[in-house]
Length: 165
Image (cartoon, rainbow, N blue to C red):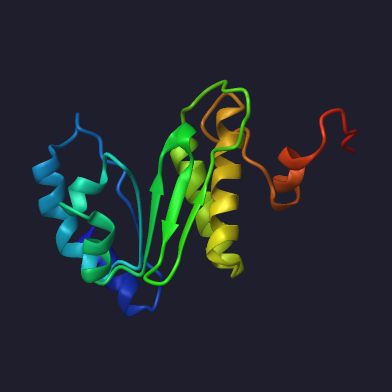
């Protein structure tokens, strides 16, 4: 992992760390020992509120900025999400959809955020896209089957009863 981050950084790539901590696979202490040394080479961190302590103790967002991270995204599931840069903070509620299956929602969220980053949209639009792709994921069975194309992203904003062709 450290070598992949080093090579990505050397190539000029944006490095994103999606914490995705699984307590059954390793302890917080073991995960922290492996992940914290990478922070000086990471541009973007994505974590849930309960994963932030893996990377930093008190005031984790400020600590991540102090370590050199440029952007922090905090996933809160049904409670929405927040995105931070040193100069900006944005919060978005979760999209209201019927929940069918939560498998893959976090990965869909990150995919939406990164696609917005690659498309060059601003912080608020990236977070909007992330909560939207997360909503599409939970509204369908499977971990990727319900994910939208770029042209389908606006479907959740359609007035109920609208005909979609």
